[in-house]
Image (cartoon, rainbow, N blue to C red; front, side):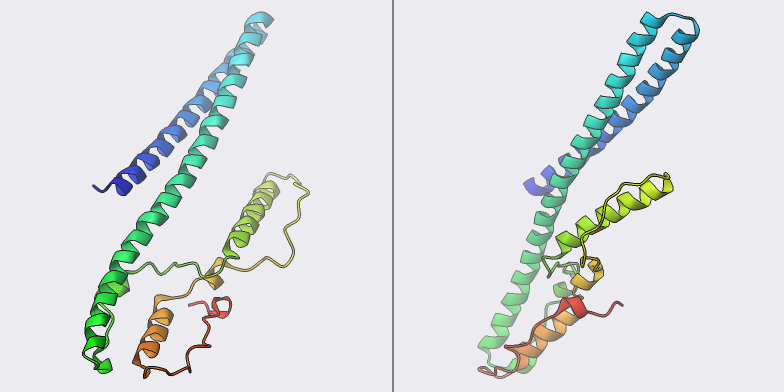
Length: 205
C-alpha cells in the first residue's frame, strides 16, 4: 500500500478510535450522575460531590475526544483530496500521452480521450465561493438543530451567500465537450479562447 494511502487509513482509524473514546466517556458520565443521585438520596453529600466531579471530568474528556476526532477527520479529508488528485494526475498523464501521439501524426480526426477520462472525479470545485457556501450550511444546520430543540441562537447568516454547492460543480460531460471542441479546432483559431465555463449557471441535472 502506498505511503499516502496508508497514512489516510491510519488517520481514519484514529478518528474512529477517538469517537469511540468519546462515547465511552459519555457512558461513564451517565453512570457518575446516577451515583450522584444515589449519594444525595442517602444524604452523603461528600460522596455525591466526588461523583459529580467525576461526571464533569468525563463530560470534558468526551468533548475533547470529539473535538480531536473532528480535527483528525479534517486532516484525513485533506489527505483524501491529495490521493484523489494524484489519481487524477495519473489519469491525465495517460490522456496527454494519447493526445501527443495523435497530434504528432497531424491527423486531428483521431483525437480521442482515453477511457480513463470517464473515471475522473466529477466533483472538481471550480468556484472559490464554495468555502463560503460551506459556512452558510454550517450556520443553517445550527439554526435547524436549535429550532428542533426549541432554542434561539440569535445568529444571522451572511447576506447574499445562499447559493447551492451544486451550482459550483461542473459535470465531466461539459468539460469533455469543451476540451474535445478545442482540440478539434485548427491551430490558431481564437473562437474558444474567450469561452468561459460559468459554473454558477450550470443547470441542475
